[in-house]
Every structure is written in C-alpha cells, then in structure tokens.
Amino acid sequence: MSTSRELVLAQLQTSVGREVRVSDWLEITQQRVDAFADAIDDHQWIHCDPARAAKDSPYGGTIAQGYLTLALYTTLRGQMLSDRSTLPGVRNVVNYGINKLRFPNAVRVGARMRARVTLEAVEEVSGGLQITEQYTAEIEGSSKPACVAEMIMRLYF
Image (cartoon, helix red, strand yellow):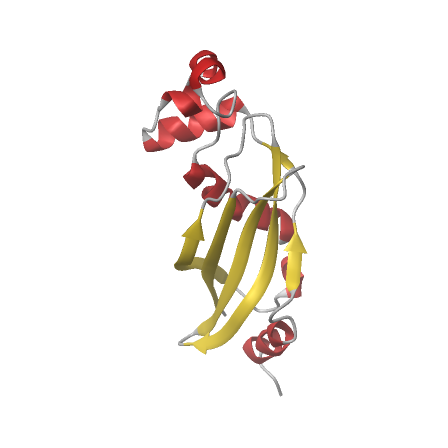
C-alpha cells in the first residue's frame, strides 16, 4: 500500500517542467508599500513619497520594494493552494530557501501583478519532499517580469 508521501511524490513528478499555477491579479497599493516599508524600515522616497517620486523618479511615481514582490510569493501561492486536498497527508509546508533571485522590472504603485509558478524539481528528503519552483511575478501589461526566483519548499507528512 502506498503512503501519502509516495502518492504526492508520484503526483508531483508528473508535473516537473510544467507551469502548475497562475494566481489572480493583485493590485499593488501605496498602503501595502508603506506597510512593507514600516515592517522592514525601508522608507526610501522612491517607495514612500508619491509627490517626490512623481517629480524625480524615472517611473513617474512610487514603486514597490523588490523584496515586497518576492514576499508576495507566499500570498499569491496561498491563493493557489486554497484546496490542500491536492496534497494528501501534507501536514506542514516550510519555505526552505531561494537558489536564484532577480528583479528585472519595477512594479509601479497601482499596477497589478500575479504569480506564475513552474515546478522545476521534486526530491525526497528526510521526513518529506523538497520541491523547487520557478516563481515569476508578472506585471499586467508588461512583457518583463518584476521578480524571477527559484523557490525551495519542503513538504512534511
């Protein structure tokens, strides 16, 4: 009889190399940017001073912090995993790390972004499975993404 871990491993292996999720669009508001600035103590004018950014920024207004676009991975991915029954037996999901990270484009306040996720790899680790995903934070109307990261998570049973 197969265990939950074996079933999830087999299920995930069939999706390696494929885009597995696309989130809903999320508007990046000044309120969200300011709250993130408060959380990480990064109040640079390009993020938090709309009047100055409108005048002095090459973007014509304020932009989200790069690390905010990265941090939204968990929020956007959470939208995509509202039905946990697709991973039977998984009791805990842990963000394990990032292999590669780039911020090719700025997200202007008022723009909308979404996550596109491709499953890159799945492997067994002690007590669970490790999955590697390519996270691309896509900006609505732009061909250049805001963030591209190779994210690693561990699934424990």
